[in-house]
Image 1: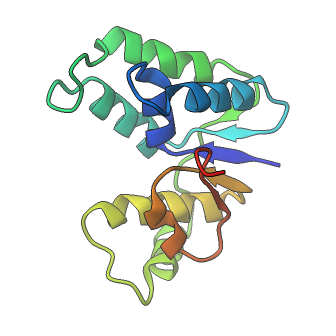
Image 2: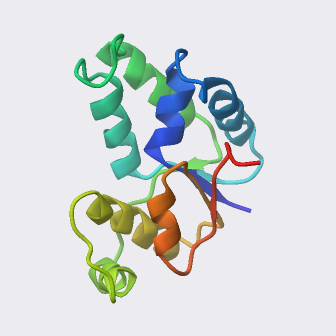
Amino acid sequence: MSSVVDANILLYASDTSSPFHDPAAELVRRLAMGPDLLYLFWPVAMAYLRISTHPAVFDRPLDVDAAMGNLEALLGRRHVRTPGEEEGFWGLYRQVAAGMVVRGNLVTDAHLVALVRQHGVGTLWSHDRDFRKFEGIRVRDPFRT
């Protein structure tokens, strides 16, 4: 079964002050070990870099080299995939967004959902409840019991 992690999981895994740090770090470690495919879509990677290094978001933001090193550790795994948008993406995005008002943060969420659907990813790991608004994907929150 394949998975993708949302940026919030990567951020919690990097933020040792977060109450979600330990379970997020364990999930990322487990997924990184394989053998199942782990997708790291570029919008997620870029959101991680943007947020983890931002001094207005974290009291102790990561320096750029540390944040990039965290991503490179994942990207170096043989079963991690980084595909992007393929032919037909825009039509799929429109399907994902149909019947909803997709604006603000939901634009990025719909983008990720369309990528998940386009690449047939089995599970999206996220603490963001907005993903439950979209059909056709399996969302799991690693912090819900």
